[in-house]
Length: 338
Ligand code: TRP
Image (cartoon, rainbow, N blue to C red; front, side):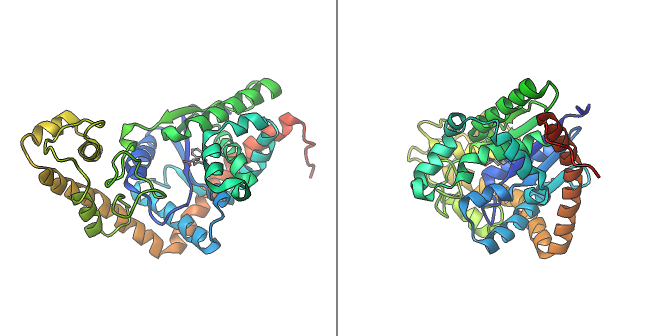
């Protein structure tokens, strides 16, 4: 069961027409790195996004464009597995089993559920939103995952996955499932809104000028960076508390170049904000342009994209089937003969 190479699993929901810079720097680049020397499995989790009642045609489009961005960023289907969650039916099946191991109170303590259900009110809250973290645990446990790269906001969900794994092993026998470890993505994931730099850059809360979408027209990207909100004391320094705007620009600069922030600050000593913004705009456009172009290539050949996803689903299914079979046996479901 446990293979020698570490297995990595992560996923994103198809909830937007373009990922934003934070997803790219904080998640995708690390996914790409983690492919080295490990077995990586990445998924577009369309079943999760059904909890938000998406328009059906929009969901279909966003599922393809999300997968295309993974590929464009460097997820390599030759080395890794890339698939759409609903193509592997074991996810929904294991989620059911795991739901019978999850306490109501335990699920009710998930802060993301509390936040989201408070936002939409009781009448807008579906049961899927409540069981969302159980489906996420199924995603992870199905692949005997060792390492799960996720942002800080998913830490509690991952804790639940670990608790469920340990509970299954305690009740059904050690070795029934692998207990996953979180791999919390570094601070580079913390990119703030360009206009309101105390808030996270986010598809749902940022204004069009506060956000950098990776598929956005490069001219708009450059303009947004050049018009980022900064303070009036005109000193380039890293001080997130008092100089959130400039500090955010420095964080992005550092993430894109791999250079340490003090180094960048030293280079810009005595220079104006406009200088930093101009250079950063160029850096961002340079980094995102090839990703954008490759994404558009994939989107323009949906047959080729669908073929990659079909191959990924076949590889994922082969693993998922074995794990689910083992769990079905452990809980005592009568094996189907013939
Ligand atoms: N809940 C995750 C998010 O919103 C997405 C996700 C679903 C996920 N299943 C997963 C992430 C399994 C890691 C592993 O970011």
